[in-house]
Image 1 (tube, rainbow, N blue to C red):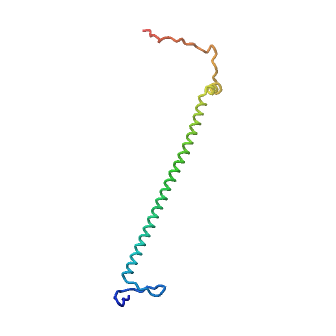
Image 2: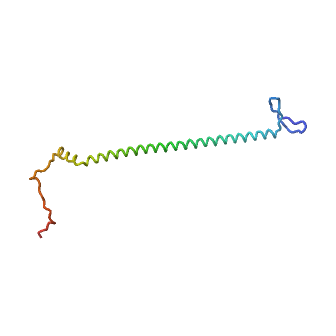
Image 3: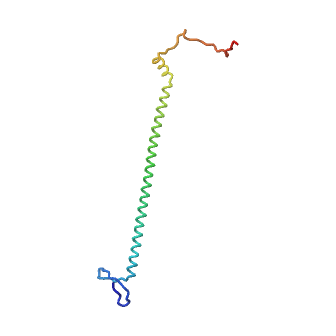
Length: 131
């Protein structure tokens, strides 16, 4: 450490292109303080940008998950509508009178009754008891 010849203030010699540049101790401390402030601000800015990037990626992932769930639900909904149509067509074909008659005649061996197999029951009022 050197002292200024006329003022007596301490200063350090710092190399430069033209030789040594003399700076006072206060100037050096001020310079280092500003560099620290700039470094802190720089790292704070980088931290904020990284935080924003993480938030953006998280938000994008949430949107992608929701879109995937919507797509899956739409496919399931379409599949269920197709199953409903198939079941309705099957129900309509099962209740058809021609199909029922065919099953009765072919599988169960039923047929139309002969005239002597038919009995007619007269419709009368309620039966009276003999008490």
